[in-house]
Image (cartoon, rainbow, N blue to C red; front, side, top):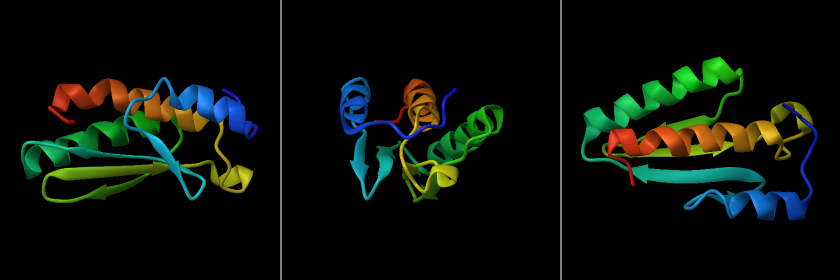
Length: 101
């Protein structure tokens, strides 16, 4: 998995494949709303497992019934890379199983 910074066109193309995700301040971001605090916490734990597997970690913010995800590649000066989109895709894939929208 490449850690080279993606071009603006590559970022735009990849965003089309990730509904609900956007780029803010050079970070790939998405917020999820869940049924309650327990479901939100369970999503955070599941995302943490994925992050460990990928050896790539996002900033996670846990609210009562929300989880905010923000990711970029620190080693590339905060640029977006393939690693960021791979993590976002994995989060997007598991979120529905936690009743996240």
